[in-house]
Length: 327
Image 1 (cartoon, rainbow, N blue to C red):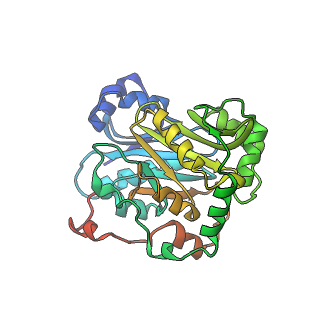
Image 2 (cartoon, helix red, strand yellow):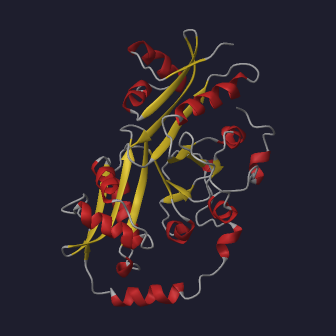
Image 3 (cartoon, rainbow, N blue to C red):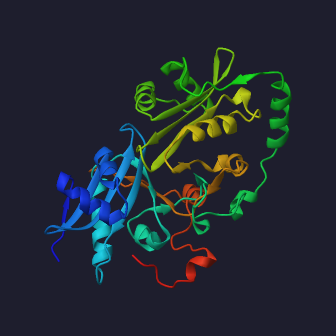
């Protein structure tokens, strides 16, 4: 089989792409995507994949799909699609929204299975793709000394504050947003130029205010049809304990029209997201850092991997039921 991978998208592909995904409008999503790759044998479409991004920081890879062809060709096509797409995503940490049947394939492609990804759970979503509400992995039962009492102290201090949620970016400046992100994420400096571009290119933005003071912010990048990813959910540390993050997240989620809304966070936010019942922990979100060409291999960080990903080859009990995963 001679497989050709291409980034070209022509009007004549409309019927082929819609047929591959079994729904109308799929071609339009490819047309609007940040990047995409198609696999062909002569004029037969064998598979496709695309990426959703604001073009600054975040990438969500979706719709990795191949036709059911005999032998090892399915794996060859899928790996080829990912390899070709990754050339467009160098220097980025990439999320991939996958499927149960793609577990072994994505591990082979170097993607880690995320522990800390959540999806807005809507009617009709398959239960098997999600962990039970409030689920925690073994390492997440360790107590954080003093965390509960500090939270209660802040809540008491802030009890008289009235927080408003404009349902938009409102008057927030790039400098205010950048300063808030830096404060909320452990004082790690943020590049104001990247912040400005990322928020300007986002599909949705949410803010929270105490009077004229910006105390919370969040944003989402969407493809205008099927997928959205929520990013930069940040609350001023002085205002934590007032459910600002939750209220802002739910307000933002309520405006997103795409049916699948996914977010990936750090281990320290597990307790926060587990308390938001509208979101469920997703079993099939993956992540990989795509190296720049010529960039040295990043040193292994076992501690990072323990908290961010399940071990390679890890399976939940029900994932052994069908035997060898289908590609």
